[in-house]
Image 1 (cartoon, rainbow, N blue to C red):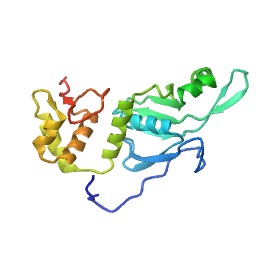
Image 2 (cartoon, one colour):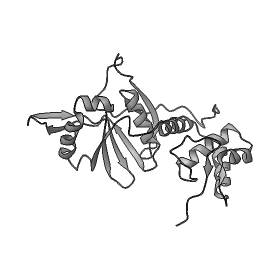
Image 3 (tube, helix red, strand yellow):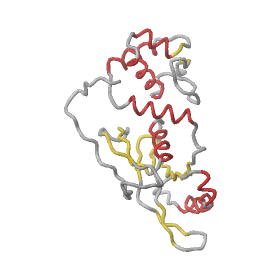
Image 4 (tube, rainbow, N blue to C red):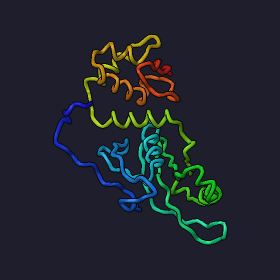
Length: 230
């Protein structure tokens, strides 16, 4: 799928910054990591997840242009629970946006959160989270994003793993010269680069160079338009 031209010697990714590590094996969850290059750093970095839902959340976060940094398993915070006792919570991700705001994210399956009344507990955690730690806190469940959003995020992450400067440049040149709506397939055909152009066009959409309906899976049939010039 990708060219084996990495443009230089292999440089291993930096290790996760997580303050809490998980056991390597668990019957109850799917644990692992992704390797990503965040806008806040020039180096690739490991980002860990404890479940498939956390993996999906992480990939969707990585697909957002406004996200510049993600701290997986950041330092725990202290709060008072419903019984008035001191308790601890470790958010799954601490996200930094390009405007400087930080969002602390807790990921829980919706049914489990409801059964364990975690939504009530999270309300306490949210109001007691220091503004120095995060500007806001969000509870993300399996209903927070669609299957199409996850599928697009998974493909984007895959396509970002290897650079293709030639295909990126050719596709972006065609996109910037567009004066009407066209399909991604037509852009791909105009380049003659086939799969390379599809991957480049897919990335260009998420870089904001072209627009399409991201509530649907991005395919060659996706209709593209250009952002309005302000």
